[in-house]
Image (cartoon, rainbow, N blue to C red; front, side):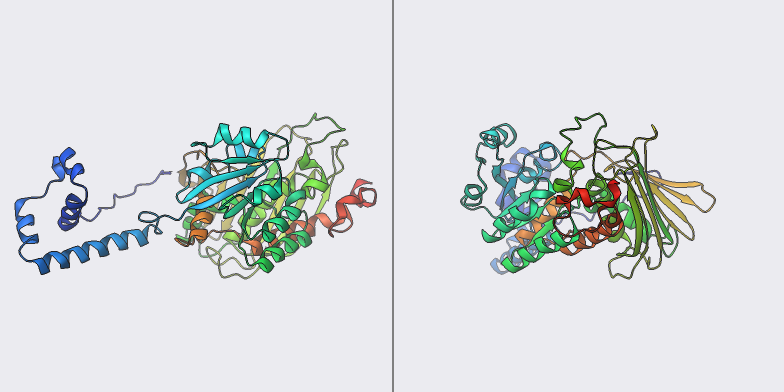
Length: 442
């Protein structure tokens, strides 16, 4: 992260000579290679003046090691080893979310599953180093993999509920792709299923864990827009699914039975959850959805939302009562691409791209003068920070404040239901099976 503002260097405390001495005892080879680390003779003499002093020093150094371990979430001394499996090996797992399961600290990817015969084994051989990851074509066989601790579900949402029931019955923890269910009722059903099994459910709202999201929280707390949030605005115009697809075989993101709606279910849920995370839950939600310019799809291509922020204990700064206005336009009626997220307060505003993990954050004062800009490196795997946090939480070594669970997934689903309900004539479980009755189609 690079901030275009003068910042002083933080001086690190000097390394303890006693700590260096113990390292020389424990790892003499290091000091043979690096003579600059050698300790002077006075330290050796003082350390060996008496056995009591030496033992006392040893205890002190051990305390230092324990303190350092706690400060890093326990990963530096005895990392947990959570054995993960993945169900669903589509595009999302190739780069964004697959590799973190074998790259994160305390994590190993031991099994993957895809229904197409032989494809899971091919994926495991191609993607996972070490040759220890097993590919399965059958979910039941996959869940019986020896030592499997937790399952990442990366299938389209239409398959989430059935898979979660089997994962719960097998006694595994689950990390499931957003928006979890195809409607709020199905999301609540999935959450209840895992609660009944006594197993944790984590949800893949990965933008919570982005460095730029955490930087945004810090900027809010540092008062750049004032003491409170007054408004949040978001506008998206463009497509995540290119136009021109085969009308007889649309992508799953445009099939209500698989996605629960149109493209807003895939990317709009991220914005709704991020506003919830930064400011608080959305209340008094209103909005609309329509199909403006997509005759080859049954689902909506335009959605708008208006709401107010409700009370919460987790908002970065006071935000209750702030107005929220969002718009997602996937209709393709304009060639202009827009992706802008704006949080405003009494002293200015913060602007950023809503769907990018790495584009800059810009801070403006009340006169619309740029006062600060923060840039970010593009991460290799955008889901890795949240997957690391989930793995740490499962291993009992750390609990990140940005973890995403079933409760916030339910809140996001309820907001989406509210604005999509008029289009579908209800958002009960199974609404996707009655397209002839959707008011928005006619």
